[in-house]
Image 1 (cartoon, rainbow, N blue to C red):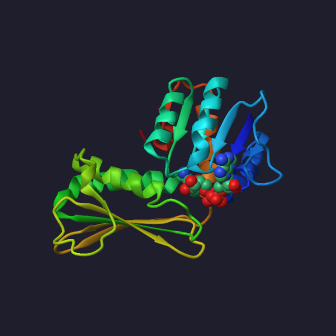
Image 2: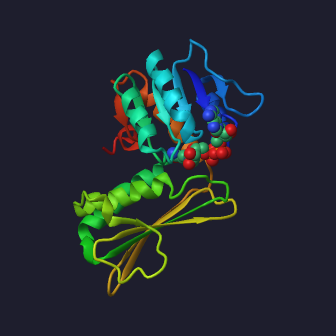
Length: 243
Ligand SMILES: NC(=O)c1ccc[n+]([C@@H]2O[C@H](COP(=O)([O-])OP(=O)(O)OC[C@H]3O[C@@H](n4cnc5c(N)ncnc54)[C@H](O)[C@@H]3O)[C@@H](O)[C@H]2O)c1
C-alpha cells in the first residue's frame, strides 16, 4: 500500500515510517514542515497516516477526501472546528480516529467502562496522565477517552461532570464528578491511571506505554483495516473488533 505519513519528522512519524515499511507498505511521501521533508503527497498515494499537529489536520484530511483515500488520524487536541473538518471528510472516506492506537489502552477502555458501570458514582473517579515534557496538548486524548468510558459506564451524557485539575476554593467533591489531571516531565511515553476511590477500598487501573511502537504498530494496522471500508469515522475499538 502506497502510504503518506504526515508529521513524518516527529517522534511518532519516524517510528510509523519504519514500521510501515517493515509491514510491507511503501512510504511514498514523508510530509512535515521540517526542512528536507515533503510538502505534499503524490497522486499514487493510497492511504494517509497523520501524527502531526492539530493545525495541519483540516487541509490534510480534506485533501484525502478529495482523493478518496483512507485516513488514519492520531493527532490529538483538535478544536471543534478542526474536528468538524474531520467529520466532513468522513462523509466521503473512511477515517480512523483514536487518541490511542495501543492494544493495551483499547483493552483498558473496556475494563474502565465495565468497572464504572459496576461501581457506580459512589466511587470517586480521578484520572491521571503523565507524558514527556515536549507534549503540546493537555490533557491527553487518551485521558479524554478514559473519562468518556467512565461516563458511558455510568450512563452519563453530561460532559459537565468532567473537570480538569483543581485550584483554589473548590469546595467538597460533588458526587459523580470525573476529574482529569495532566502531569508533564522527562521522557515518559504515556502513563494513564483511572482511580476508583470508595469509602473502604480503592481500585486503580493503569496502563504504561514503554515504547511509541505500541501506538505506531496500531496505526499501521488501522490503515490496512481501513482500506476499502465505507466512508465514516471509525475508532481503534472498531479496528480491533471490540466495538
Ligand atoms: N493517537 C495516539 O496513539 C498517539 C500517540 C502518540 C502521540 N499522539 C499525537 O500525535 C501527535 C504527534 O506527536 P509526536 O510526539 O510525534 O509530536 P512531535 O512534535 O514529535 O511531531 C510532530 C511533527 O509534526 C510536524 N508538523 C507540525 N505542523 C505540521 C504541519 N502543518 N504539516 C506537517 N507536519 C507538521 C512537526 O514538524 C513534527 O515533526 C500529537 O498530537 C500527539 O498527541 C497520538
